[in-house]
Length: 212
Ligand code: DC
Image 1 (cartoon, protein in one colour):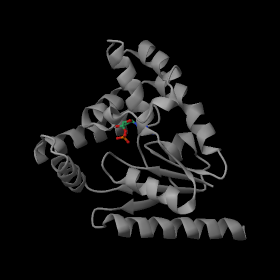
Image 2 (cartoon, helix red, strand yellow; image 1 turned 180 degrees about the horizontal axis):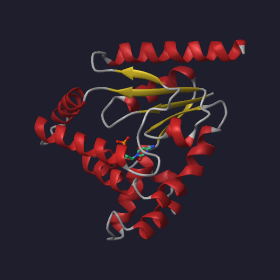
Image 3 (tube, protein in one colour; image 1 turned 90 degrees about the vertical axis):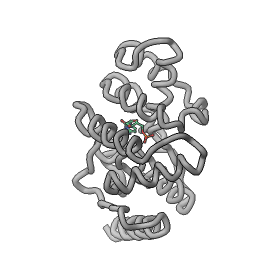
């Protein structure tokens, strides 16, 4: 069973993916961490984030064991990741790792921007999680405030809009919903309601496959 969960920054897809994986006993991969780690490694080399050659080399040399670095969760790391993610050679270098992760028994939940469209176009279930930029900014702002980080709502909203624009407009594997994805708009849903809806979608799909 492969479950693809895509969506924009701060849509809640990561929390949802983690809970779905735990609920169904599947592996979970936050694919954004791969791009965040590539950006970190490029910056460690002192290279520019849009240096395609150095970024592709960093992606090929990426050590998946180094993904639990807490610095990768910081907002600046997401912005940097979005820049290296535009480079086609970076995306190509990360593709096989993601696909082989998805094939690990008994199955996996992958969350990102292009899982349903490019990484696992044959996923058993695809969910595209979204919410208005204002709602996402509000959630992210409250999270940051809770951690005592300096932020303003307007600043967070501007960052979200810029990242959406960059991720959706790149040439290779842009962020978009697969045609066969279930669209889960969480603008008016809390995490419990979003989780219940997603579980319902997965069980329905699994039932359909069982009958096919
Ligand atoms: O999901 P996230 O915020 O951790 O992702 C950080 C950036 O990485 C995102 O802005 C674009 C890029 N990304 C991508 O291009 N494709 C993915 N499957 C996941 C993330």
